[in-house]
Image 1 (cartoon, rainbow, N blue to C red):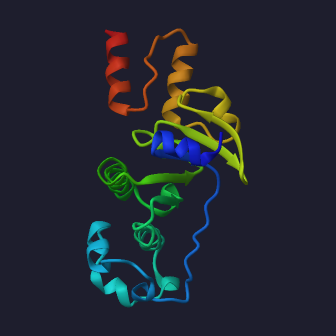
Image 2 (cartoon, rainbow, N blue to C red):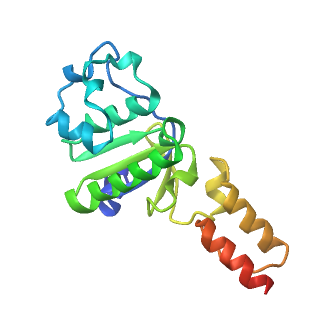
Image 3 (cartoon, rainbow, N blue to C red):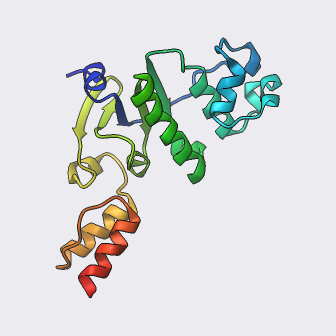
Length: 187
């Protein structure tokens, strides 16, 4: 099965791999061919003054957002490096935006990152690729084989540790649910 087939089935797929921005950094933001640039900037919480800046002087979060809005008119949107370009608040905002693009506008989105925790509450399938080859795919954040290719998130590590020690903690990716479950198991 090809990644395009997987994308057609799931709509939003998380990919464990590396991502490189392809924008020409010698251009200004306004020189990029972006439909409704003012609305697009507002959609991703960027000020209008960023239009006159060169891409080479933009911060990582601004560059990520410009990369995203430059692809909004395409059916398949590929973005990456959310965990290294955006802070927590911005990541959560962009995750909501990506979900809205999939659900309301029927876009197909591939999110490329090496941090599995980014995919919590975002994707239903995680795919590990190397070049164009699919090495592994899973729907389970607690799949041990997934972590042969990437680092284990702290919450997954903690739940596995507690369950190995005899506690029966529900496998969750939500920290608040984990706290409630630990409280229930102690009382």
